[in-house]
Image (tube, rainbow, N blue to C red; front, side, top):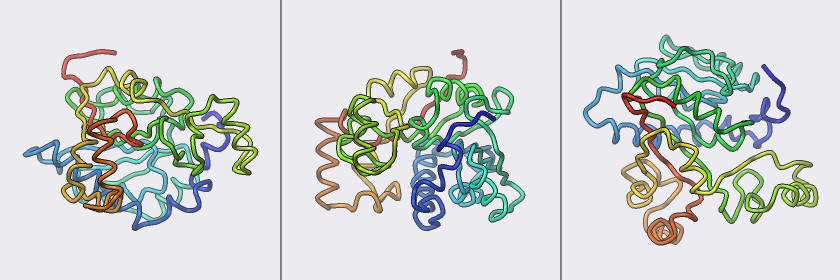
Length: 257
């Protein structure tokens, strides 16, 4: 597996966020609510699920109660080791694997989770090709993606960082004392839409903003709050400025890249 600097120990770099059970399980509940809404009458207990960028495995451990089997993969050795030692169930496994070339055969999984991953990988196009490849025809990917046009960069909490040209972003990082290099590569809405063009896109962003309780997202958007009202306004009138998009990507039954 190639060395990639910070990406191979990312769980160390985010102030323990990947080890916070309550926070990660909240996220798992939103993922599950969206998947169940999309699947409708389909029996999720008969479906296989892959989480790419699973980190410490807290989300995957939660989801094992709802799916036939769950596999988590990551290049973060410490996070995978933590997951393997902490969560041991018959229908759950964690593998050290590289999203730039997954070790699974074509058409393996019914569902893939890819949440806030694309900006961290060396090549986002390779990432989506691998997701497409290992999904079964008709399979779906829960895809959560940050927007380059966010006013506050989510990883370092610096205003306008992701919007700046790369050389200025690196300088901004140094001057702020946050690091010497800005690794993340966010895309704008058109860039994200182009990235996933091989899939059929089902947008859940507006659905979640309209009814956070339905999708177990009150922790992000408290109904009736100022933040919630602002999110509604942006989603309706300036969708291209939404800080995060949540989409279901469906692999066509008869298709190829």
